[in-house]
Each structure stands twice: as C-alpha cells, then as structure tokens.
Length: 227
Image 1 (cartoon, helix red, strand yellow):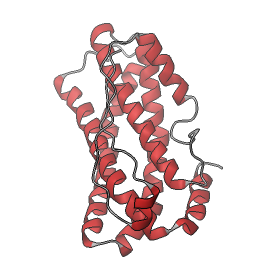
Image 2: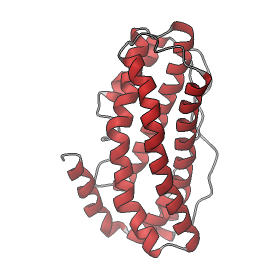
Image 3: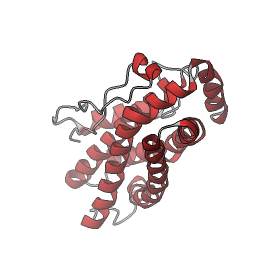
Image 4: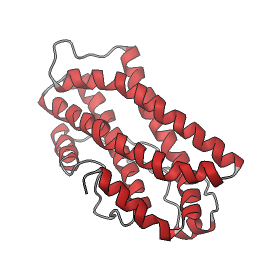
C-alpha cells in the first residue's frame, strides 16, 4: 500500500494552555510519500489496533486527560492514513487478505474508539467552553458539535463500504466515484476538525479547567472505558 498523510497541527505547549492564548494552526505533519510493501503496512496497522485503538498511549495515561485526547487524535491520523493506503491497495490488488485485515482495523477504530473520544469532548471539553468561553470560542464549539453529528452520519455510509471489504463480499470493489467521495468527505472532515480542536478548543479548555480539575476528568474517561 502507498503511504499517505493527514494534516495534523503541532501540539500546543503547556504554557500556552495555561495562559489561554489561542494557538494558530501550525505547520502540518506529513509523512513522505513512498511505496511500501502492503504486508508491512497491514501488519503495522494491526499491531496498533490490537492495543485497543484510542484507549491507551505509551506516552499518556488517564491522569493526563488532555494528553490522552491528543493521543487519540494521533491514532485518528494513523487510522485515516491506513484508510488511504487501503484505498490505493484495493485499486491495484483488490480485496485480498491484507485488504480485508486493514478494513477490519479501520472499522474497529471508528466503531469503538472514535465514539468514546467524541464523548470525552462532549462531556468534558465542550461544556466549560460553552459556559465560559468567548463568543468566538462558543461559535467554534457549536460548529465542532455539529461536525461530530456529521461524522457519525458519514461513518454510517463509509462503514458499509469497509464492512463489505472486510467480509470479502462479492462485488465489494471496485468502488464508484460516488463511493470514493464518501471516504474523501469523511477523512477530510476529520482532518479539519482535529486542527480546530488542537489549535483552539483544547488550549482554551485547559486554561478554563485548570490542572486541579484534570484528575476527575481523567477518572471519568477511564470509567467509561471500564477502567
């Protein structure tokens, strides 16, 4: 599968979060475009997924809830990258065993981890911003909430395409231009959404909540995951 990248802004510093300064979206992270063996790409993606995607990160724990939210975004980025590689693989090799495994990995992430991540934001990040944020921040949060709803609708369409590949259904591929657009729209919305959350919403929420409120937030995030 070919490698792809999804725009991802640099993480705001703790000093920025504490002062409440809104960080401007910075340079996007990008992976160099290079050809890679499809077996290696699928194996790497499977290893990530088998860690229970989006729930744990080697660099963060629930005692650092905003770091966990950042880690979830990094996993979204990797999973969207896997989706892009899968699409290229399908065009050249069809729905072979490697494609089916990659499709299952993408399904697993967006079925399980992504809804939990959105719930974290809806319960812990957005409420203080809506209650105490500036007019511009409130407007942004309302847009982010609408995007969560749009993502859920788009995923319902996208997952049907991926489920057919994962199950090896007859006629699952090739995808039509309209079906490819469904995946383009889904990936594009997620990428733009992450930029706005990382550059504005998260720093503003960290400043409003303060570190003393992070521990209860982390415990609640862990509880919803059975921790």
